[in-house]
Image (cartoon, rainbow, N blue to C red; front, side, top):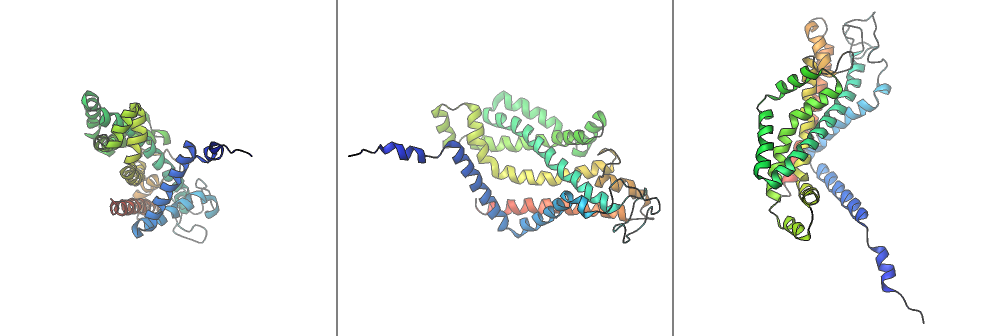
Length: 302
């Protein structure tokens, strides 16, 4: 007669922490996808954004000219079979510069917001969790930054360090971090009083683990919506900085720079300015529709 160890089979079926984490991730991703699908506003915004993402990724296949290629025989021309959106003052294909400019704005925008969120989380979590003098010190520094108008703060930073893609990311991250930190602080101050946080303290979890494992995951709803909204703001500000000559240095394809270069010659050729302006407007509207749809739909289940 053989004996069976009752723990030999059951122990192997217990999921590991990694498996549980991945399962939670896919579950959250599925719920987020279902939330987007149930919102017509979010779906419309997502389609607009995805259209620009496709343009950015497949720009070499969708354009017949390089963004820096100059056609001196066709300077400041309107749409033709060869140049579907015309050419600018240097004979460069407008459509090509719009398509490649999408790469710039769709990469710098999310990166700058991501960096801003890292800074905001680093400051907002301890400020809201500990309170007291630490909260006062962090908030007073952030309030001093928020006292500046946003675009003025960007202009000061970029004027001091120079115009480049990295410096644009730094400027937008510094300008956006205070607002994110205040949001995280407010959410943390509310969540730190919940029972599961008290239970984590009784288990002996460290403050860092409590903030990362108990508080931060329960802030994700408002933070995801804020992240999506700020990408739209970042796209707008990148275009504004380009128009002011503080964005990407020429001849890099930049929608704001295209408007700045062509606005003085709009009477002769409106297509460079019109194309770049419509590109900025449609992308920002798409991002805002997507964020608003997610926010409105998520509030229905609260």
